[in-house]
Image (cartoon, rainbow, N blue to C red; front, side):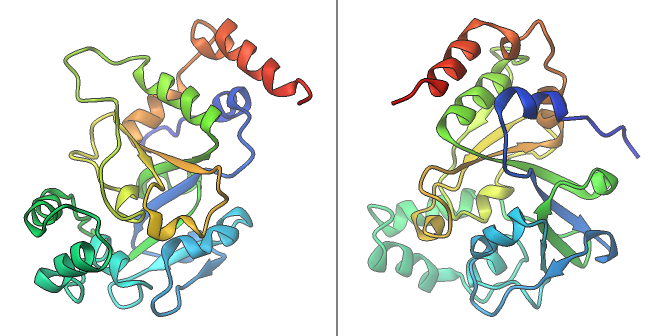
Length: 239
C-alpha cells in the first residue's frame, strides 16, 4: 500500500475542528465500523451529524438512500432520462432549458463502483488504498487557505487546480474529470442538500494526489507566513 500522507500540520495550521471526510470504494465493511445505512429516500448529507461523531455511511447498489445518490454514486437507472431532466428544469428551475440541462447531465462524471460497498465517513489512514477522494468540511476562511494550497504546486498548463462543477451535493464528492490527477473541487453548493449543514459550511474535496500535495506544504509555504497570520489574528479580535 502507498505511504499515507500525514495531514497533522496542515490541519493544525488551518484550524480544522471537523473530521476529514473520506469517500471509499471497498470490498469489506469491517474496517469502517461503526456503520449506518441510509433510510429509503434519505439524503447523503442528512448524516452529517453522524460523520462528526465518527460514524460511517454505507451505500450499496441496493441501499443508497435518495435516488440522486443512487444515480450519481451507485449506478442506479431508476432516476434518469427525460423525467429526470424535466424535474430539474420544469419543477426546480435549475437550468434555462432542457437542452442545457441535458448537456450538463451528459458531461457529468458518474462514479463507477469497483467493489460492493461505498463508504462516506471519517478519514481512516488504514483504509487509504480504498480512498477515492477526501473532503475538508470548511468555513470560508479555511476554504481560501486550501484553495491557495491547491494552487501552490500548479503549473499554468496543468489542469485547473480548483473546479466548481454544477451538480448534486453527492456527485460533487467525486465529480472529477480524472480522479488520478491532482485536483480539488468546491462542493456542498447544491441548494437541495444545504439544509442538512450549518449555514457557514462548505466542502473542499480533493483527489488523493492533491491531498498528498497539500500534506507536503512546509515552513516555506504560506501556511507559515504573514498573510495567514494576519487572517488568524483578525479572527481572534473581539467584534
